[in-house]
Structures are given as C-alpha cells and as structure tokens.
Figure 1 (tube, helix red, strand yellow):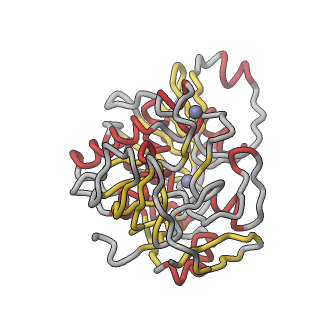
Figure 2 (spheres, rainbow, N blue to C red):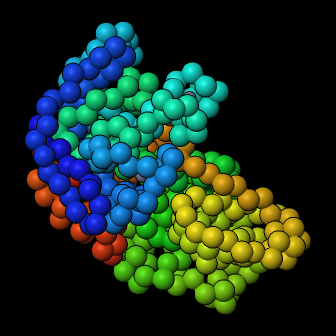
Length: 345
Ligand SMILES: [Zn+2]
Ligand SMILES: [Zn+2]
C-alpha cells in the first residue's frame, strides 16, 4: 500500500509499505479521509520540533483518519467489519485513570502512542488501530466529516463544553483557522446567540463569514472589540496559540465570564490583577478531548445536521500529499484533506 511520511524541511515522502495485519484487539481500517492539522505543520512538516507526546518518530503521518473497517483481530467485540469509524488519535495504555475516563490524550504511560506521531497514522491506504480508539460514524456524516472530528472539531467541542456555552452567551473566538471555525460553528449549534471571530488574516475572516462560523469577523484590535462587546463576551476561546491572541481572549472576556485556551503554543504575559482577579474570570486550559465526548459530538452532529467537512477547502488524493501539505502550509484557506474516492462516500 501507499503511505506518506514527513521527513521534515517541508517535504513529504511517498513510499510503498506492506499491508498491516491486525493483532489481538486491533482493527484494520481502509482509510477514506485523512485531514491535515495545524500541529502536523507546526511540529512535523516544517521541522521536527516535538518532544514527549509531540515527538515524531518517522511513522506514517496523519492523525485525523476516518474510514471503513475491513478486518478485525482476535478479541475485538464492539467494532465489526463494515463499520465506518473515526479514529480518536491517541492510543493510551487503556488502564490508567485518564484512559479509563476516555482522556487517552493525558495518558502518561510509556505505552501511549499518537497516530501519525509515534505509531502509523492515516496518510496511508490502510491503518492499524486499537479497537478502543474507534468511534462509529453516524450514517448521515461523511468520511471527511469524521476526519474533521478526529482532532479539530473534537478539540473545539471540548473547549466549548468546558466553558458550558449556551444560549445565555455571546462567544468570542480568537484565531479563525480550522479549530476556530469549528468553535464558531459548534458554538452556534450549542446556542451562543452571537459569535464574534478575530483573525489578522483577511482571507480567514472572509472564509469564516462565508461559512457562517461567525456573525462578525474583526482583525482583533482592542478598540473594535470593546465597541462591539462592551465589557466582553461571556465566553472567549483562544484558537490562535499565540500570546497576543491569548491576551485578546482574556481581555475581552466579560467580568465573571469563562475563557478557554485551546490553541497550542505561545507565551503569555498578563497583568494578573487587572485582567484575571479583578474581573473574576474562570480560565480553562483544554487539551484535545475524550473518546466519550467525541462519541457525544458525533451524535449531536447527526441530530443538528451539521457537517464539519464544510471547513475543508481543498482535497487531494494520497499520491498528491506533497501538494496537500504545501496548500495547508500556505494557511490561506480552511482545512486540507487527503481523500480516497469521493468526499461523500
Ligand atoms: Zn490535530
Ligand atoms: Zn493510560
């Protein structure tokens, strides 16, 4: 089968590799969609920056896979051949407290391995996955929808759940990359009455408006935000991952409001009394999501009729993975996907 590797220095290497064989508790997935994440670009594609859970170990790339099960190993009980599945992208030890709660992302066992980082990921015709990492995709959702949920939409949904977003809230989304777009779309579905997005890129602002992810899109200056929101939004989510954006999110959260930092990276310097204490803020750090919450999101998306694949602005076959990464790295559009067959299959 064909597989794409990410040697660094903005290169993609295509190689023929042997088809994997599912062992005990494992499942073989025929990959149908495998989207590219900001973290793939930041920590693997440009250069191998990652340490610990972000250390790339030369495996098949791609941690947002979705496909159909074609074989199961011994002891597999819940998942069957023919199931359409989303792969939760971190395989934990399965036994520690975090894993048992479904937060395999926070597993600290040496056995923990993320797909596309420490074990083979979704940029290949077939993927070997652990049964416990798989969620069954509702019939109404496409494979590309599922790939978007595997990391980005799951991460955005978790952040919104942590802030308990509802119809009582206006939502500020700082950073309108794919996770920011997801936060806007999901925030509206969860009831937020007004969604304000900020991003320095005019292209990203235009896309967010066009997709209906935000009601207003601003460059992110303090004055224009204060004009629109007064004391601030009841809930703010930072998806920018840089200190400037993170500070914008905190400064424009309303007194007694809730802020969530979900964009990875950045260094934040903040006047603690002025911005946090005197304004009575609750600030959450939120890292990815749990398998339980991801399953819940899939059920809601089905009920809401919301298709995450609308944030995908370009798709390529696996043979053109190099171009797919170039387009994603340029950062002008929405999410970029590698797909097999058509996008609705
Ligand atoms: Zn990701
Ligand atoms: Zn664990």
